[in-house]
Length: 146
Image (cartoon, rainbow, N blue to C red):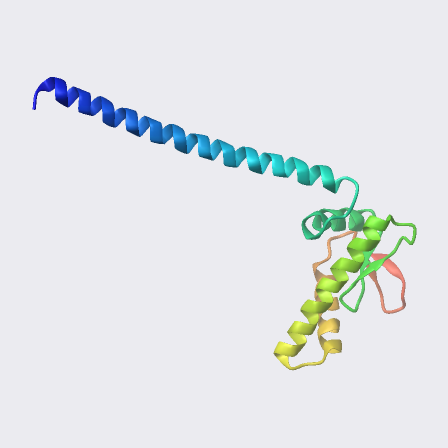
């Protein structure tokens, strides 16, 4: 094989490799743009309403920090501020529904009563609460955790 043919083969291989690289880069950029656009669409739709678990985690933390929501001794969230927005109220309901399903599952797996699981969950959540979070005591009074 002559040097010219070898050179041409090297150029063709390099061209194919760079085309593959460009194609991969184009596919990656398309995927990234799709994710970015999906993120913008998700954040735009989240501004006006509560839209599920991911947004709820942020809202829950903010609502707890604002003393609108607190932990009850039965393992559920309690609404402290009755004038809270509908979004906060829906978040509390959704969170409590998820917790109830989880507590029932734990009770079933352990073969124990739901009441004992609720009591244990309430104690655990109170212990895990941050300083300043609101807790409902046995007398029905909301107090800040110290």
